[in-house]
Length: 94
Image (tube, rainbow, N blue to C red; front, side, top):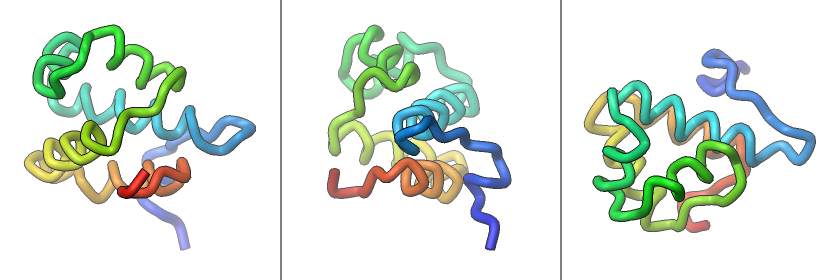
């Protein structure tokens, strides 16, 4: 069965995780109509952290993932966002 992550074309790197998560975060930010700085302010992190999340350099903390999920839910994108994170191997408890 094809997942929403498959339908929206979430990529996977050779490790199957960082690029998919990075793309999910970037796609969510763009769907919310926010700049990296605006999202960083909402997440209470630095803009360069958002950039590093989107590049797959670092993974967001559990707290940041929960906030992102809340933003996604408020814009009817939670399922797609959570599916993409699951495909990336990130669980809500990570």
